[in-house]
Length: 149
Image: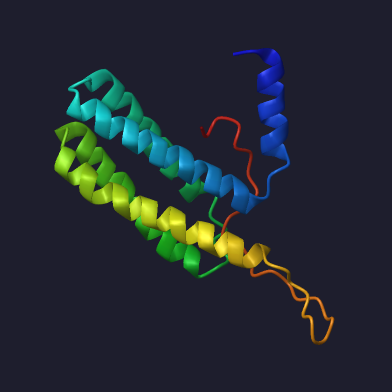
């Protein structure tokens, strides 16, 4: 990869908020799952295995970055565990139907986070009182993403 592009990419990642990073990881996860699905349909098992393993790595990273002080983190951890378990079963069984069942769940979770990000990014100052409000806390910690994608 071009050194200038790599430096630009790292700088862009370093200036993102934790929520932006999380959405970027979810986008990459959905891309990898789509690649795995297409590879499995084409019986390209090397690409399928690589894509499935990378998907599992991304979910593990998302789980590792949860800020455990928020109660929702426990629920997210359970979902991530379910996704890792399911993707391992899909990977070893090369099960297209199960992949097509699990992938929409991950897409829905990503879309939910995207809506939450847009909602929290809305103007936080009350027009009537002029008082600033705080954004809701994020269940994601700021952790380096360098090798996550």
